[in-house]
Length: 425
Image (cartoon, rainbow, N blue to C red; front, side):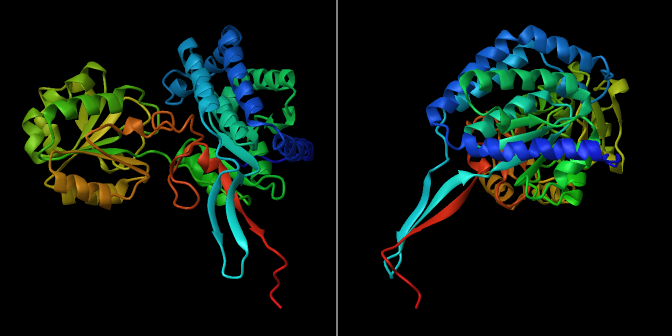
């Protein structure tokens, strides 16, 4: 994000952001039933416009090699558009947290205090080639009466423009403020303006590669909610069931390998090496490239396809592969697994497969991650799967929000103090 910001681009972005502030004020007056009706109407409109959306998406796809790990995230299909629409419908059915009374008490001096949930205000969303985020982020922001500036990557500019046009049309038809959402120019320099827009934007949420997230965290003057890349581990403990391991590892690696909650490293207890090849047979059928340590390599050689099997090096641990590749590390016990995770984890999602209740409890307590799992896959680290509604990202930090960020994470709070003439003098 080192492109030079021209005066024209800077002024254009600031103008867009200025409109968002007034748009958010107007949105604050909308009634919940109006917001929910808009989300339902937008869902229908997206499905009706599927052919035109796919036509624009095809223009973006034509510019990206299919071998690029981002290709799958960029790609829209009729099924995926239906999934995006269904996410809006789920949001419409959920209660809004805005206005919820989070706390109430009366002080000794008679003052009555309440703490109520309020919108964050104006959100800046910086993301890469993920057109679904355009709709998901708008939906969550809109439901919680936040305005949002969308800064998608240039790789998805045709898709994003088509989706925003549909959103604006739905808002205009419903008589709701169109200026509650804007799409910034695709140039990287526009992100630089957004990150420095103190007074215009209340918070920035980056969603994408570790490089993007690091750049936003290190550069932004506006407060950042950090969503992290997913370097995800599954530990197959000594007592872990083979049928569980086979199904969980297969789904966590092959269901959609480009997502942040897909497994990157399998930590396998030494006792399972004799049946490792059989357990990983579904990965071989899916052409998953395995980078194995010395012991697991020996166990797999001759049983896993030679063209998909190689020795791991140091860089194969602590890497988010975003594709059909996985590393394996053999460990002697739970302590070995915990030490490896502590050294290489991105604090996103980690899982254990075990029938040992003590080991499960120790893993769930000691692993420092936003989501930890026992005998299930890390793919459930997802706002929709956790019934939070469509998520705006998965936070790996510990301030404000952690894990899948649904509606509640898009609010702050204010204190309301009521008295009867009390003074401090």
